[in-house]
Length: 164
Image 1 (tube, rainbow, N blue to C red):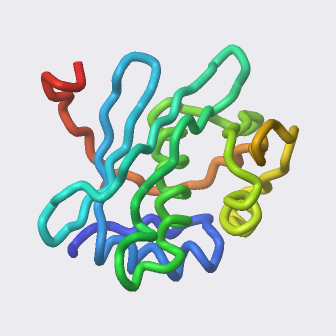
Image 2 (image 1 turned 90 degrees about the horizontal axis):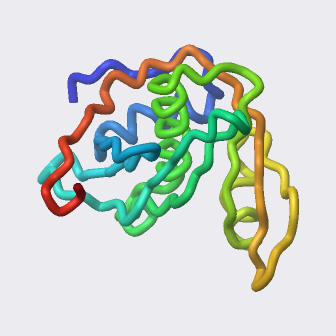
Image 3 (image 1 turned 90 degrees about the vertical axis):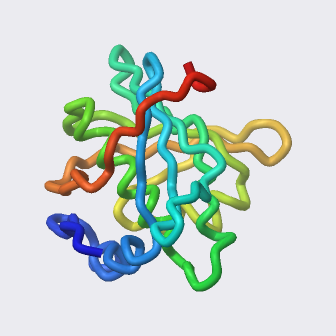
């Protein structure tokens, strides 16, 4: 795929896995009011593989809320670690789009096991558990550190009549 790769300022892990991500997947997004939804698709057939990737920006709280993150990548054969790359790209695209600078926080709620096996290992962020909730749920946050990341390969997808 002849796409510019966003390599400036990210960890060695991200830099080494970004090209692999773009060999398999692409990302589109839609804007629906105050939130953005992202879609991961297989580049071979352009079919969506993601279930739900939804974010909003609470400007008053200076907080990016990751409402859902189910990219579906872990279900694809031979794509270990690429969900981490997807998370990284979506956060940086969203922040670039909304002109979010330093001092903003990333916030989401997840299961403790998912935090332990996935989010705690994302070294491009500093995720910490803020509070433990019911049924193994935890509130998680990290400060957002803006990097010079080219996310121009993520393109806007028009809303369909079903989404409006």
